[in-house]
Every structure is written in C-alpha cells, then in structure tokens.
Image 1: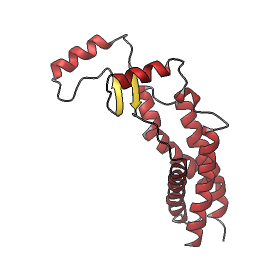
Image 2: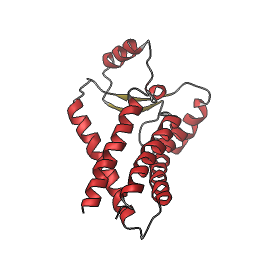
Image 3: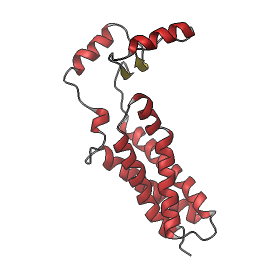
Image 4: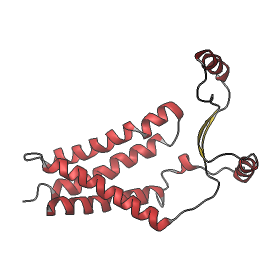
Length: 181
C-alpha cells in the first residue's frame, strides 16, 4: 500500500508540476488561448443579446432538425466562417479550489497508473516508462486530438507535448519507484 500511495503522490506532484509549467512560464497553450484585441467588443455584444452560458459551435442547427435541413445546412456552410465558443456570464476563479482539484486529479491519475504498473510481474524501466507514455498518448488521442481533428480546438502540438512530457517524467519516477525492492 505504501508503494501505491507514494507512487501516486510523487507521480501526481510531477504531473501537476508539468501542467503548471506548461500553462505558465513555458506558455505552450497560448495558441489555444489567444488574445483578441476585439475581446471587449465581442463580450459586450454577447452580453447585450442575452447569450446563455454554454459551449457552442457556430453555426449549428438546433436539436431536432430534419435530415433534409441538415443536408441543406451543410451545403451552404462550405467556405464560410465558423467558431467554437465557451461563454460564461461572469468570471469566477477560485484558484485555491481549482489548484486543489487539479492536484487531486493528477494524484488520482498517477495512482491508477501506479496500481497498473504494480500488477506487472517484473517490468523493466523501459516497460514502465513506455507504459506511462502510452497512457498519456491514449488520453491525448481520446480527447484533445479527436476534438482537434473535428473542430480544430486547442493546440494539438501543445497537448501532445503535455501528454508525452507529463507522463514521460512520471514514468521516469515510476520506473525507479515501482521496480524498487
């Protein structure tokens, strides 16, 4: 049990540290979170029209549209502008709560990975490292890359760097820790 708890805690710290570096001083995600000089105008307009909070793909047909409506809609979209958007009426950032939740999630992920690794008979350092990197790549391909394929959201390269580096660094630690007597 000690091996699992220590593996989860240290792995979680490593993963959380990478996420922090990636989003702060390394600034890998700027492309996916770019500044717009027209942001005040856009936000004022969205507020003035009573936009509901939510996540949007613009344009999109409302739920329940017929197949004929969908076919006609898709034909007229080609070559026209579109957007993905997440709109909230007010900014509320509880950094303490967000940091705690983010940290607990990385500890949980590292714990699950440690548990899997501990079930292997006698994994080599390379097997542990590659298992960690593959776990990161599975996560990356499941959501960030799939979303990028369909909607070009996020930054596929920054998300790939996160998956490989975060779980690669964790794999270096776990490669030593899990194999330790």
